[in-house]
Image 1 (tube, rainbow, N blue to C red):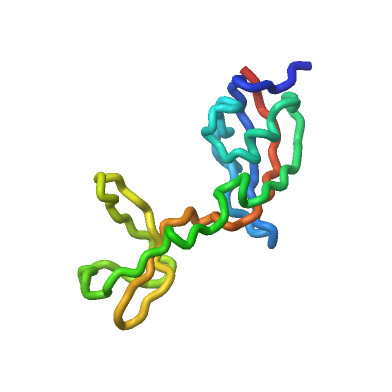
Image 2 (cartoon, rainbow, N blue to C red):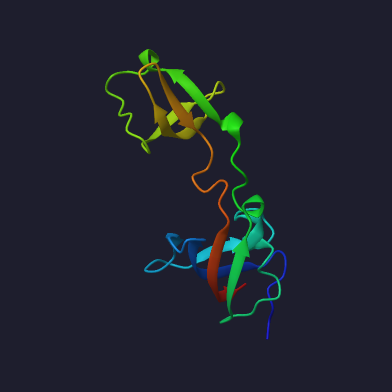
Length: 142
């Protein structure tokens, strides 16, 4: 039976959960996720779990945050003076907004704190600082 190795293109079904059991993503009802093993297109902890698996094999992979979306980086939080934000921009906690970096790239941010003077925006990935669990099933290897 063919085992997955670096450079193979694989297709997997997956369910990603947090340690408390909440599902944050799943391929259920969708096409399997396709990627090249070792290409860096998926989180490192899941990528390194692939070699050696075979078609039809199921595996639970527990991934520490450092091998997923990384720890929370305090430097990725920024306080903005509230008067610098247009009135039509919603500032409810958890609202996803988009900022622009000095070089013009879009940067997704989340509103994490609001007071009378400032709005704190967080550019960390929403899953930063989280250990993750993936239940995977290998669908194909090419």
